[in-house]
Image 1 (cartoon, rainbow, N blue to C red):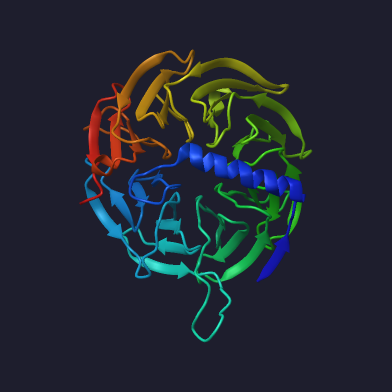
Image 2 (image 1 turned 45 degrees about the horizontal axis):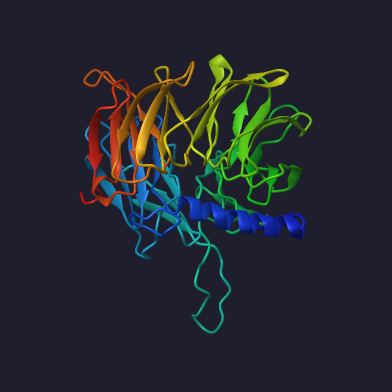
Amino acid sequence: MKTFRAFPPRRSRLLTGILLMLAVLVLAACGGGPGDSWEGISTSHDMYVPYVCNNDRIVALNPASGATLWSYTDEAKARFYAVPVVSDGVVYIGDYQGNLHAISAEGEQLWVYKPERKKLVGPLSPTPTDRVIGGVAVDSDKVFFGLGSRNIVAVSRSSADEVWTFETDHGVWATPLYIPATESTPATVYTVSLDHHLYALDAETGDLLWEKDLGGAAPGKLVYDKTLNRFYVGTFASELLAIDLATHEIVDRYETDDWIWGSPAFEEEADMLYVSDLGGHLYAVRVTDAGFEPVWDKSIGEGAIRATPLLSDGLVIVGSKDKHVYAVKKEDGSPVWDKKTEGEVLTELVLVPGDEEASSDVVVVGTTDVERLIMAYQVDSGDEAWHYSGKD
């Protein structure tokens, strides 16, 4: 197992720590888990089964009704708030003890990776304090993920053995991005960190290929534009950035009114980005060879918008800390519908496509209301499709 280090200046580390404390205060959630946590939600790409991580369990839900298909808990009483990721029928999810779980499509534990911890006296060891906050990236034989305090880890998909660790100076909350090898570039894991840096790592060895200072902490996943060979990412410096992969340079910046926590949503066919900030603003930005072109900027509701906007049927849909879900038109940001919830909506939003029985797509969101922990709304009307209380 290899370990690599990358440390930014001390002043940058201090500013990052202060910034993160402020961000947690802004978004403090209060339903079912620790004060700085909310549910992790995702879907499989084939069956569109919603997977929900909340507190001590992971549940798979029927996408048509919200009924529980299976529930997974860990003997060590692990707590889960990260985003589950499904690959080849396996659900990968990190917990709040720094462990990584591999779960079958039927909800059975396949393995658990537990990081090595130094023992003090006999069986005693330090209480685990690290957390897995983001999702994972996978290649054919490895799983890549970040730790909440610092570092990026690669683990074998077959044995759960640690392959390598790359040390950062602050937490990695974002889900890493894996890009296969090309003629000129080895298979690479890209991630951003709260230490203000974007890292490009050799997927096989964990060696640092290159890095870029972004000028601000970046908690959201990188978005890849294959046509322009660029990354797009938001930062706590209130900027949307475009980074050229060929030159490793920032080619454009778009200033927002407040910090950006979630990833931008990219509509590749239209060359459009939609991004939200913690001030409750939603932005539409066109991407061009020359850089960003602002299209519209709307104030949505009265609360922070933490997560990535969801795109469906000509709409941009966001959840807000003001206990609403909002849908606006892509072309001009004009309102279409909004729905009041009983809890703050801080989770990622996921889409369940309609079928022969349900013509409308459904957007699934998590809230801090323990009675209606998960809400599903019809995209075309905003009407409730189903809800999940977490008590099934």
